[in-house]
Image (cartoon, rainbow, N blue to C red):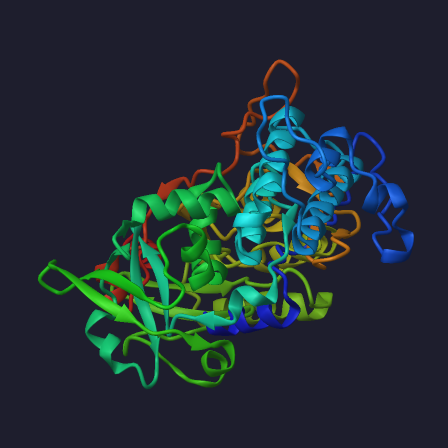
Amino acid sequence: MRKRLCLFLLTLCLLLPACASATQADTEPAPKPDTSEEHLTETDTEAPSASEEQLAEPDTETSSASGDDPMPELSEREQNWINDIRFLQERYKTYHPDPFYLCSEEEFDLKIDWLCQHVGSLSDNDIFFELTAIIAGMGDIHTYVLPSGSLYDYLFPFGVQYYNGRLYLTAYMEGYEQLEPYLLQEIVAVNGADISYLERKFESIINPNNKWNSREIFCEYYFVPAFFDWADCGSQDNYTFQILDENHKVQSVEVPLVSYEEFNSTPLVLPESWSYREGNLAEYREGENGGYVYIGLDQLSGLDEAGFLEAFEKASGLLDEHPDCRKLVIDLRYNPGGKMTLSLSSLRKGIKILKEHSIDQSYVLIGGYTMSAAINCIGLFKEEMNAVTVGEPTGQFTSFFAYDYIGEIVLPRSQISILVATMWHDGNDFAGAIYDENGRLYEWEDTILPDVYIHPDIEDARQGKTSALEWILAQ
């Protein structure tokens, strides 16, 4: 958990890896924007529209016809934020291949106008979350705002995870043993704000149409004090979590804040039965009803083909060592995607290696963090190996906006970056897409349902077990 967070903070981006598809969009993608300060014209930075002029340069020498006081002058900070927000408004419309696929231009402009009118009453972090919610509301998971480093000035000294739709404390930092009694206990509120309210808030900044994806991303990247302040249930210096004890009674637990440096340098205490893994690997695992060969695929990018195929070649050797093994498990639960052309080409070679063995049944584990190019991998496993998907719904559908290059908008004053999709990718239609009368996916076509639903269960977790794998072992 922390390794992922640290890597993310070092790069200051919540980067769902680019899905550079071999499939071309129906229309040519917009040219990559030049958002450098030198490129900005006077119109970009200083010539707002008529409605902006009222916001940015009010006439302080006249009063309204009703005799009200004149509008106050804007501070430099307010003007800078308004310029940045208007810059984003214009550039998003220019560079996204279909900016209003799900959300209308009128709604988008109203949200932008509201934010411009309220910059004076919002903190910088609050403005960041409002911008993030506006972009998330456009319905394109590959277009999103990269977090500002200031969000992570202070963190909580513990980690969280969802089990069967409920939020649990799953780790704490050494030195904060007062949290030990609440390890693997359910968090039901923060400063009295119910978790269901907070879920709606974090869905609004991540993926309003897909709770499975929102939960995963929130736990990994946005479970920070700044979020709770924006959600109006923080107090900047006092955070009390309502957590159920082992008798299911609510206990109020005051939680201190730690700096990013302290969080990064202090070991985490995990449940004794847990182990942590990341990267691609292959293992043989045994159960009462026999065993299976397990391939964990966390990476589809950052590897050459030889590195990618290493796990498949090891799995082939394990199948040779265990000739009675007839089950294969491919774990895509922690795979957010990667470069599609390389991953699919390499994956076909990996599948060819596996098909040299007698395998009765293949299973693919999926969940809310399974996105982008990993979705195409699911289709290939189903097509080539008749795989059964097991777990929870994915974080994305088979077709989606993607990248053929990384389109980036940098707001000139705050330096906040927004990654922008540059093309539409038509994916494998194994999930049975449904389109409206305009040929567009409905907004609820935002996930792939598993063939077999197995929700992570807290009782399994307390025993160091993975619910989906336990189900597969029992087959």
